[in-house]
Length: 361
Ligand code: KDG
Image (cartoon, rainbow, N blue to C red; front, side, top):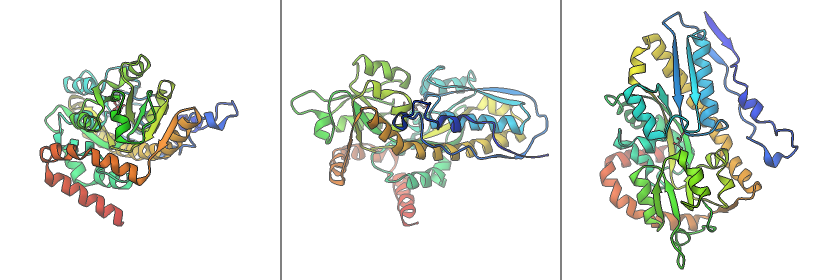
């Protein structure tokens, strides 16, 4: 039987309303694209599965909205035999813990930043190199390339089946101490350097050390209260995360650094994967790719809009000109000296070639 129908997902459409306060400046989300219609064959009965998926971001995030679409595709195309229960907001643990749960089979799916998974696939650390990916188009080209696919394949044997990349996005600095327009503002001349929470990733630590900050690796789920209590001055994440996780409530200053583009990796426990019939495996893979495409679309729609919303909500946002960005790029050069040989000069050159080709398209 062929199935062509609208997704049951209405969240994205509903979320684009302005909540009745009449203040566009306080909208909960931009005018988001509807999820594409769910099309394709309804599969026969290959057993029933209830999958649990956990991640760190909130219900209003592109990650959550597109994961709902993923769940809707599976449910519709198996007549409800596969259902996915989603646990956002780090309810089940942080990125590192949830990947370990996938390995032991105590969780079916998670959706971490690639930066949290470099212990499994060291090549993923290429994405953590600062200012490597100058545009979203270039980043997408890398994720969709053979290089990207071989990173996903690199999970084989770890107990984790990597299904697809999608977009976390360009990371920006926020803090509660002072406006930042230069590396000197991060390091502080007469005052101490900013303490900045980073993901648990050595390249990120090196970036913030090079900029003169005091980097502190910490789980995402602990970050809001750490900032609220002044344990750290700041953090770095895409504008959409800063907004949807309400970081602006405890962070007065934002700087558009775009220092790293972070992919997400949607992944499944290999034990769960192996329990699925081949027909279901194929469907899960297809639904993952479709939802990733939708996620990137939502994330793109959210990005600048979130920055402007944060500004409207009182965050002082600093946009950097080319010269100021060049100062940041120069200050992080030691990261390349230390990490390029470890990550692989050839791999980095391959990525740079893909970037260049995407710019000429
Ligand atoms: O759901 C994803 C989050 O768990 C995390 O990866 C978000 O970028 C992130 C961070 O800073 O931890």
